[in-house]
Image (tube, rainbow, N blue to C red; front, side, top):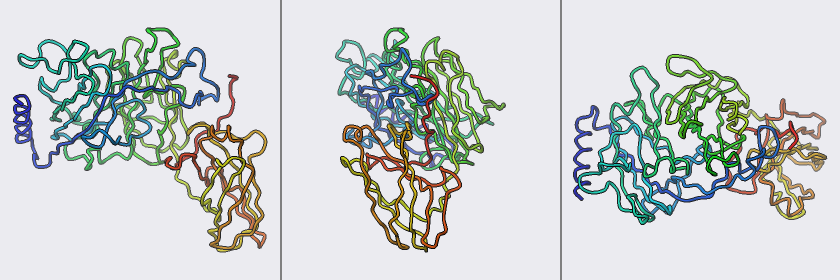
Length: 471
């Protein structure tokens, strides 16, 4: 109670002394540390070269510990996170002048904490184990293992403050990135996966959620070699956000967007990284760059204007890191401008032996024939083309505004369970008057249908997996 009272007084003083104090907010987060099984390559594939995961990294599932965000103090409903965050904990945000409150619950079997970089805190909220402790007591509760730490099932509420030094320096971008991580046994905890980003936006430059006003998209990329087997090559996973060999998803940008990239690194002398973007040059400090240097503990902000559409390589440029899979892709896409006269209303490919597609005529003329092609997805990024036949031809007439359901032979039951989704393309539509419609390109019109009905919609096509090397 004494620490909490002193802390409350401290942050009231900060708020009263800070300019525009009335605009400051308290931003509350509910974060748990949880033991999980993590897969560094959930597709089971090297998605950059359409092959299996190279030797010696075939075992990609390992025990890890993560920071996971919840919606409230019950810690019962997980808060959705962008898929590109991967193994990282939630983005903790603040505008200069804000207070950050983190209600931390430890569900891991070992004692843990949260230590923030960049934000202002007092000793009771440092989240780090070393002497001196706060006053005459340990900083944290005594863990079951016999040394200080927030034990399994324990709670601790951290109070941090985003002061002027937490935000961007004069002349810099409107927001900067910091990191947070466990600090009871810091080297072990970061290797376990207890890491995450803090983003602080300049005063007056933040939206309601504290993200910067002058940016359309933000991505955090954490470069780190996770060591799962005490230095053995088969246990060294050269990962971006916990993924290897192109398995990091969600780095998707609309053409013309202003993009801010936040780069972080942690680890040891192996973790000397040089992130490189193909296809674009970024503004980094006072220079333009497409390669940026990171040391362990580095925190870097760089800006991109997404004006070069394509799917581009994003990787560490250290040679053995590339060979070990510290690579993925990002995509700059042009929004679809589909003029197709037919619309795929629904589709179901997972009933044994039978597939159904419902098509609607959204034009003003009767449709006489529809030629459709399809690809399938063995994972959200693993797009394949059937080797023999990927075409359907339907000749049933459909009047304007009407729809029809077509049935085709389905997949064998065991194989259907492996297919995540189908991508349908209207290749040609012939009207009853003999006129035809065709798309200008394959990517102009497509619809994805997922076995998981709650899967988010597909914004842009993932690259077709074309075999480049033998497995």
